[in-house]
Image 1: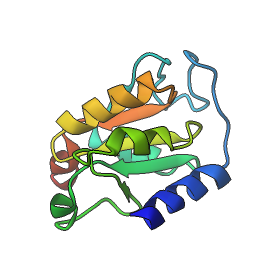
Image 2: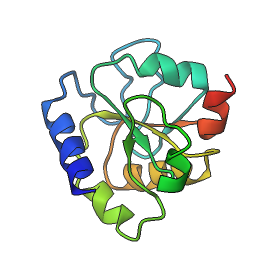
Image 3: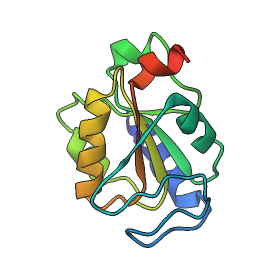
Image 4: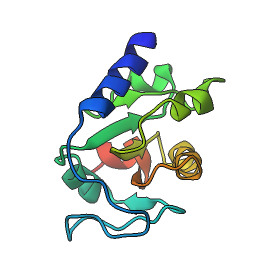
Length: 136
């Protein structure tokens, strides 16, 4: 788990791209705008399109048992039900865009709320979660 956290921190540190001011639109006209006090909901198609951006971190907040059944390629796993979840979120760099998902969207919605409250500026939830992703 320490390796995973170190990888995420390093990936965030070396990620490139522009950062937007809170409440402004994203650099790409096709990218939904997110203000500092909210987060965006994305369809699986919109989620897939945003995955192509350079400054994006995919965050899978499902349990290890769930991720053993499959993950979206390149996703970093951070179990929402881990007692240390909030402190691990706080250690993440806030600059990248985060694409967050769980099984159906409930836990990832909660994670997105926590992230925006913690000052993350670009956070997007996969509407319908991994279930919607695999059914697309």
